[in-house]
Image 1 (cartoon, rainbow, N blue to C red):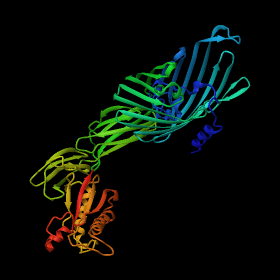
Image 2 (image 1 turned 180 degrees about the horizontal axis):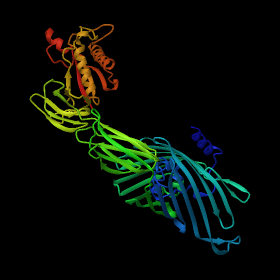
Image 3 (image 1 turned 90 degrees about the horizontal axis):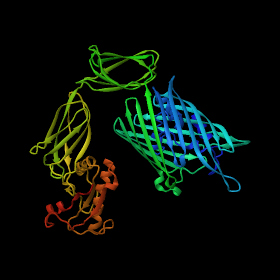
Image 4 (image 1 turned 60 degrees about the horizontal axis):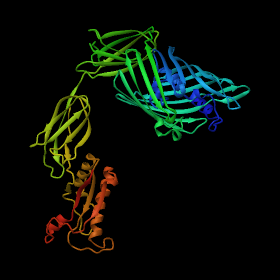
Length: 584
């Protein structure tokens, strides 16, 4: 927290106004991959340019990384960029250098007369270090030196970049970076660098990586940046991004915020390209080459695979990721060894037929032999059986049962008995879905835990769209709306249906017989039927936790009889509550 507090304090002191900082080269995004993704890179910092974006990202690299790129701007301005990440101790050293020059600027004197053109140039060099402080958590810092030649004047200065990076889950990254914390000197004057504080994040789902940065600059307004990278195959990456700053998109046009590019990787080498439009000013192009060289350390890992119950050795297929990526297998004694490993995280994926696969993470220290015993648990089997019913008629129906977990598949439900049986499936957690024989039925999904040697029973009662279910047996005393204890079993069935179908909204319709009522509580049958419907709704809400928004209570008095009101039995049937599905 001390590091984070210092970064925030240094970034916020003397927060300035537009035009109050110098050396614009320090704010130009470095590297074609980051540029193509809208310069939203602080939460990712996934290549050697991490020294510029977030030096904490250097701690992610167990191998040597080098990158050079050429940036071609409008008006013949060109940048040449170099980055390197060199593993050292628990992290990596980052080195960077940027040269930017404009070879031909027109000269006009005080009398507005032309003179010979002149050249301006800028130089920025940096060195930093990032390290892992806990599994998935990194800190880093970098120092910078700058020089600017403006023909009639020159300036020099220095600054620092500070950052933290967290990967609480393998598919999520969060970063905070305070950049360009420093000053430049021009003659006797000291000027502030374009400091900025950036909070960034990224998420990965399969071949897609998405990034988002929120940037608070010292001398400009808040801006946001976003990018996405899609890799249909490991050798190709397609990139797209958008940024609302630092360029003024209000002046240059909304399309000036777009960025795009691609990357091609062949073995340890890669080529990246990015294009960024700047409205009437023109288009900027970035082209870079990168490489990664495996660092050979002095660490080794001996893996032993055994049966979790008997501890006897097992042959198994093993693949590694992290500091070493390789797929191999153990010998007949369940043993294999990796050597020449640097410090870092090694993920071990172990698979054997008839055993539960597992993944383990090991922190390799890089200077000694370490042992990892992988105990595989034999697959154990259980089963699920049950029946599928129509929720209104309680009669068996056909349909399809699908299941997904340690095993997956589907089974047709016997239409005569409405029964199904999933036999001999590996124990574990399953998602089981039941669909009816026609599309009129709402499908139902649940999660079940199959235990070894046991058969679990699960019945499904499926509802039809726009279906009305009469809650048989729910009766009320004449002129009353209080639910009697003997009718709660029927209401419990209705509550179970609602819990099994969490996406439906129902109407609870209350009805009376034809005898008119006129009491102080219920002036007419309309108020009585409404009260009966509300009593059912309150019961379902309080006893089953059903959201009140899913239940609409409405009274219909004696306007919808289902039997003759000339007999006591007929009137009893008319004093009912109905369960009507009105939407999903």
